[in-house]
Image (cartoon, rainbow, N blue to C red; front, side):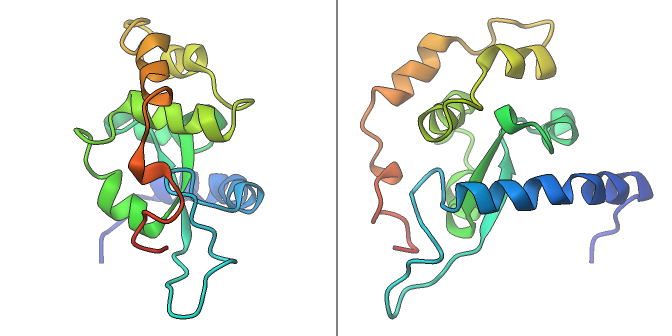
Length: 145
């Protein structure tokens, strides 16, 4: 079992309600569309997780920011989103923009996590992912479907 510092445990407890409510509100995977309440016989009802788009030292800041997290099924979380080459930040932000446009804010995202690099990700990069057909974002392509 991994040891967790008291500070990290306290932060996780502080954001637990926010994350639980977000999962309940969204109700499906924002990458593949999996809905654990609508599985057919023989399918797996993957649990939904909250995935932080920002990683590394910025991850802790992202835990309770609606503009910096995605609700994803366990299959997408473990298999797809672990590959930053396949799912770079711009693609994850595109999934957020497509699923929850009111929560999407590239400006807030960059301001919060990369204040010294305001053009690290551009709106054009995000739009390129939105305008591109994404096979893995179609319902039925996830392992859980």
